[in-house]
Length: 219
Image 1 (tube, rainbow, N blue to C red):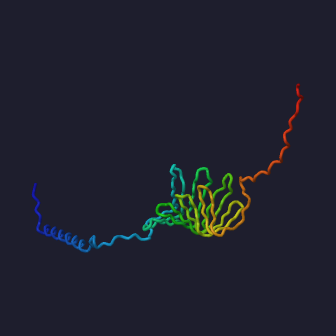
Image 2 (image 1 turned 135 degrees about the vertical axis):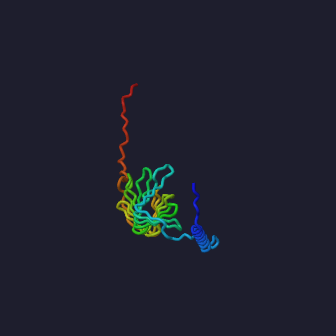
Image 3 (image 1 turned 90 degrees about the horizontal axis):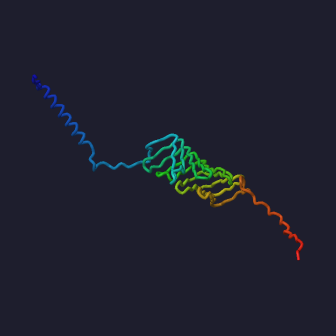
């Protein structure tokens, strides 16, 4: 096999290219800031991802769906890990109980998805049950505490239950006990219970005392 000879021009070209590469690397290293000079990255309140038609479900200890959070659009922020929601809907599912739904025009979800704040034309609806009529609450803000199964507001609220209507300066609704507490200046009109709630029956007329039939006595 014949030996290939390298010409002096080729050697000079290789040396020049190697020197150029070494010089470029040295220049880059000189211009880059050192680790001590680099400022730590500070997260800002800017979106880091988006999603449309979002749906998030939280499960109970038994593995059943406890809450489902839907939104037309969501924006997640990198600094506090909160999520802004557009047209959110929060549904609570409790075994053997009517479904409860909260909707609004906008909302926020905290980092661990335990608190949902509903703003602007917020509405909470509890469907009618076997003994209770539909309940509907209207306010400009409702806060859903997922872990506590509580919906509350610190703003004026209108509460409709069947044909009854009440007004208050705030409200606390416990989804487990189904108890509603109106706060502050409370007023309104309460109608008799409807839809399955039976009025007590009038007392029955007293019956005549039983008569004892006397038979003939045998001596």
